[in-house]
Length: 263
Image 1 (tube, rainbow, N blue to C red):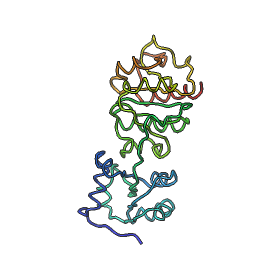
Image 2 (cartoon, one colour):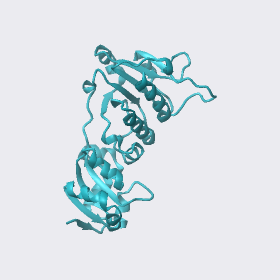
Image 3 (cartoon, one colour):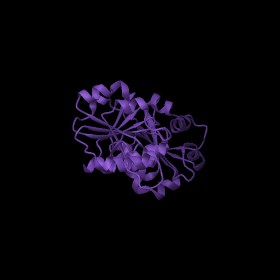
Image 4 (cartoon, rainbow, N blue to C red):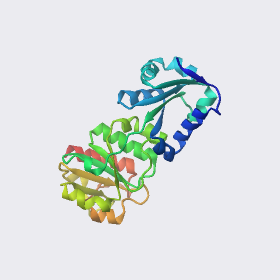
C-alpha cells in the first residue's frame, strides 16, 4: 500500500528535491533521482537498486505496466499530488514518475581491463554532451567511460535523460588529472590517444586502435589541456572536408568511437 503525500512542505519531498538539484547532496547521501516511467523501469531492468518510488495518481493509471514491477522492488512507495510532483521534476512536462536509486561508486583506473577500448572525457561541462557520449558508447559496445579533470555529473537529471539509460549499464571510471596517471597507464600497456582539431595529427580513419586503447576528448570550448595532449601516446584528428574547424564533444566522440571499435 502506497503512502500519500499532498504537501510540498513534506520533509521527504524536500530531501528528494535536494537530490534532483544538487550533485553535492547526491554524493553525500549516495542517492540519485530518475524521472520518467520508462527511464525508471530501465533503471530497474539494469539492476539499479530502487530505494523509493513516487508517482501521481494519474501516472499510476497511465504507466501501470512500468510501475507495477518498480513498486514490487522499491523499499518505499508513495503517491504524490501533481503540485508536489512539480517540486521533484527537472522537466517542463513531467510524467509524474520518480525513482530514488542507490548511487554506484565509480571505479578507479586500476579497474580498467587491459584489453578494453575506452572513451575518456576531460573537463566536459555540458550534461547533454556527456549523456550523448555515454549513449553512443553503450550502443557501440565501448568498454567504459573515463572521467578526467572536472566533469559534470553522470547522474544529474539532464545527463540521465540525454543518455537514455546508458548510465545504468556503461562502466564509469574516475581518473583525476590525466597527467598524474598517464605514465602508469602506459606502463600497464595502454595506448592513449588525444583527439585534436589539428591536420598534422594522424587521421582517425587511418589509425589502428589496439586492445588497451584510451581515447581522450576535451572540453566543449577549449578541447584537451595542452599538457594532456603532450602526455598521450598519439594524437588523432577527424578529417574535415567542409569549412567547420571542429565538432562538438558529442559529435566528435561518436565518430571517434565508431572508428575505434571497427579497427
